[in-house]
Amino acid sequence: MAVNASFTGRTYPAIAPYAVGREKIREFAEAVGATDVVHTDQAQARARGYRDVIAPPTFAVLIAQQCDQQLIVDPEAGIDFSRVVHAEQRFVHHRPITAGDEIVGVLTVDSVREVGGHAMVTTSSQLSTTEGEPVCTATSTLVIRGGE
Amino acid sequence: MSNEVLSISDVKVGQELPARTIHISRADLVQYTGASLDRNRIHWDEHFARSVGLPDVIAHGMFTMGSAINVVSDWVGDAGRVVEYSTRFTKPVVVPYEIGADVEVTAVVKAVDVQTGRATVELTAMCGTDKVLGRALAVVILG
Image 1 (cartoon, rainbow over the protein chains, first blue to last red):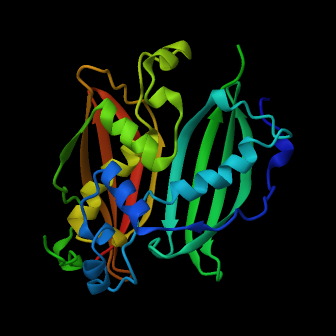
Image 2 (cartoon, chains in turn purple, yellow):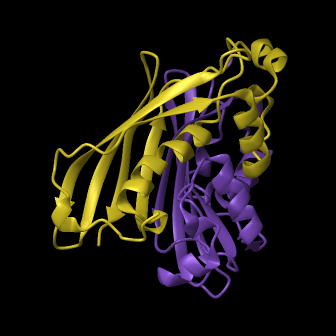
């Protein structure tokens, strides 16, 4: 198999804190066409009970992919990035990602399995603030296409 | 724009959300590439995309996922009310240089839980006859 099956259950050290900025939220919201003012207008966000502007629901991928990167570049894992296809993605938000957050992520390899000559790797990234408040669980499944 | 969050009393199983067609151009993919930092060349360089066996540039799955959820966020009235969101990427969205691509997003309420104040919405995203998101489910907290 294209991926080291013994990696199931492996956990990587937390990534360096990701500082969530208002302008990055604005930029991401604009890129996905998210026009809710809660992403761009602090006063409106506060009126809805948030501390500051909040990120769109899929913004967490920015941080989760930094977590995934640890596995992808791990030579022992044996993943050929040019053969990687994103197959599934799931986000469970414990609270919205908010401007001003400092987020750390811990990656766990949930499973490595073989399906029809391809390897399927499911990982989860537990995102929390540097103070330890859980923010989001991002789960992704990558397919690594088998060789010809 | 209203700040009113949709009330659970106004939501019924089987209810359809306002549908939307997302037009995707190469410029949109370049913008998403920059914003998301997913710089894979299959999303903006057609020579590269063809060299790895794709018919043309394809949209980031996460772009389609991230754009489609606006249908739900706008319906509920606050993007912060989307607490779960998951999908499979079943088919690529091919984005030709000249005409781009259209993804039609529809959504329907699958479940309402009055105990937790939550509703589950299933999204369908079609590009032509291809279903590009599979089992796309979002959970929202209603007012």
